[in-house]
Amino acid sequence: MTSTVSASGAFDEGSNDAVAARHSAAAGAAAAHIDVDARAVERLAALVRIPTISRHPDGPGPRRDPEPFERFIEALPTLYPRVHEQLTRERVGEAALLYCWPGSDPDGATTPTVLMAHYDVVPATDDGWTHPPFAAVITNSGPDGGDDAVMWGRGTIDDKGCAAAIFEAIDRLIAAGFTPQRDVLVSLGDDEEVTGRGAQAVVALLRSRGIRPSLVLDEGGAIVSGAFPGVDEPYAVVGVTEKGITTLRLVVEHQGGHAASPPPLAATERLARALLRLNRRPARARLDPTTRTMIATLGARARQPLRSVFTRAGLFAPLLVRVFLRTSAETRALVRTTRAVTELRAGHAANALPERAEATINMRIAPGTSVAEAVDEVRSAIRDEAVEIDVLEPSEPSPVSPASGAGWDAIVQAVRDVHPNLLVTPYVMMQASDSRFFTTISDHVYRFAPFRMSAAERACLHAKDERIRLSAYLEGVRVYEALVRQR
Image (tube, rainbow, N blue to C red; front, side):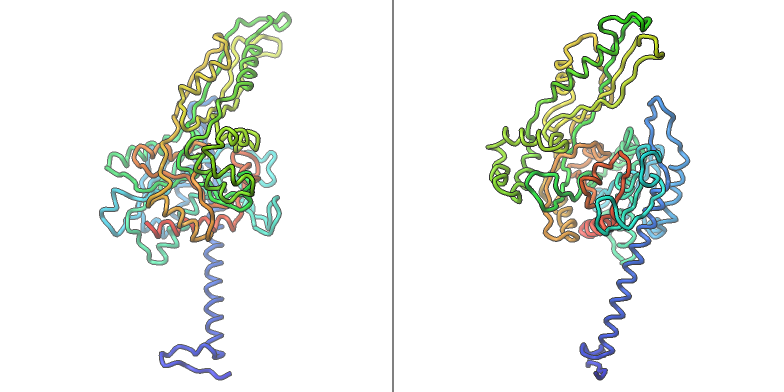
């Protein structure tokens, strides 16, 4: 074949040189893409290897070690130099960080887009982990099978994965010469796992500056499958609200004595009876409006006969509540306030009766209810005035953000830019996040980590063997990139 050149000077499409040029360009672009992705993975690994473990400042154990937090803060400019050249950075509170990427429209400074994450993690030791939690080991596949490479480590999903993906997205946009129309703020919390005081300080700072974000996106939902009865395809769940969170401390005081002559109902037995009564009387189940919308949205893709029931959620609400209560722990949590006994304390010697027995209960308050209602249900279930109930750090369910309008549409479009035609639904986030504090300065607060997560991967949050598939992580980077391009 003869090489020819068109009148414009370009290679003719049919020539050997043209074909070679196209192949060379495609190979170069592919190599560059692989190189960028490889660096993205390396930077996430570097952050996961820093053990930024949060411990409650008022808890019985040792306070957190500040050294890893300082090391994390110092590592960011080295890992993302382009981001730190273009964005300003403020340290807020003890170790929270607030970045600002100025937009082209000055009016956008008071209505910015806020991308949130936190870089503290819950404690982890090597015990029981397939790979050490702070080694960021990468394997060719995970326990779920398949050929996806996997990074193992505490924080890969909760929540350094989001933090790193946000920085990667901004870095790529800067490299492409992009400037957002309105300001983009990045809020990195340092204590989300314990108190959220860093995020509260950021909110106070933004409020003092008259800033009301037009969109706030934090961790929360994900791209999942198999969690909703009858729906086989994957779908994205975006939190438009989240449950409240409250800690109860149940306390029983009783005169101690020698264990050789125990009374019929000592402090420990009385506390145990209270917990058993509480377990037999779970909170009332109901369908809140957001969950009804989710059921109708996902139900339209369900297999029959479930589809006919799900798309008539209002008519079949009592039946749906029963179905959700029997399906899984995740679906049960969608329809009621949950209670989990997380700590038990009593006694000081093996042969002495405890003078005080305590239990800590973590409650997640369902939308449409309140902390007061949840505590009243606990009192009614226990039916024992000798059991003291202390309410600690009460937080009500968050206001519901709209599942329509510019902010919501931008999230949906960003997801579908990367995952075409993916079903996206609002839902109630069952965990608590730093985003709940932002509801005081924005009406458009959403919770979504843009990663594909299997049921096994979701089960590893706050547990052993937390991990993320690298393909899912890199897709998340692209979702953040697509979202910022729209803002």
